[in-house]
Image 1 (tube, rainbow, N blue to C red):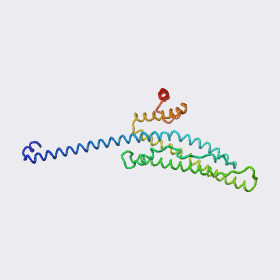
Image 2 (image 1 turned 180 degrees about the vertical axis):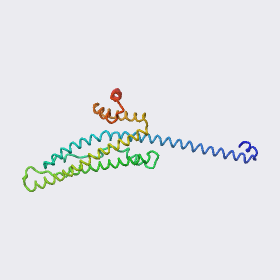
Image 3 (image 1 turned 180 degrees about the horizontal axis):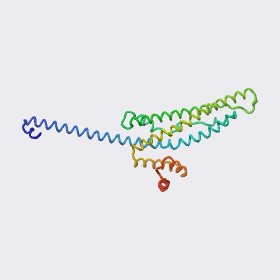
Image 4 (image 1 turned 45 degrees about the vertical axis):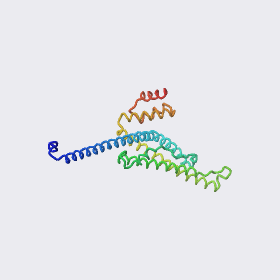
Length: 258
């Protein structure tokens, strides 16, 4: 129908129409190819960020509960001493920053407004980032108050006014130190829980095959760090229940052969 009408119009109009049609098709195809190319770039960037983010969060959710358990056990000992009006050697405790690796989390936050991170995931990442900063602040306070301990010399009268004042100041400082230690325990657990929640979202985005590849890559990092196999198996079976001991040992055997 279109061609039949085209034959009836003058040659100039006919060729002009054909030229316009060619230009339109060319522009449209260029737009399609550009969109496909841009989508591929975004997909590659998204996969790169998700893989790195998953490994970082997996390490947090694996390591931090153990830190929290240890801190809680030590704090219970400190509380027992405080009940006896004694102080522990809390002045030996200090945290050197950076304690935790969250570079990819920061990178993901800086990706706001792009197609790499959707808003729901961005909110969760921002939430865990805030919790990590609170954790760092708590550890900074513990380090600061540990440094406020005042030595009571042995050569002064331990029942004298000076010694009593120093002991009282140390007990007050120790009380505040224990409060921050309690805060640290809770925040450690919250960061681990938030990390587990985000990892599940990322696993859904990556799919089973890519998720397994990242999991095994993390396993290899632990193996190459010379961590005892017994500890690695315990941690991975707890946090990656989808894998069997046989799978872990098979991967360990590959690492030993390399």
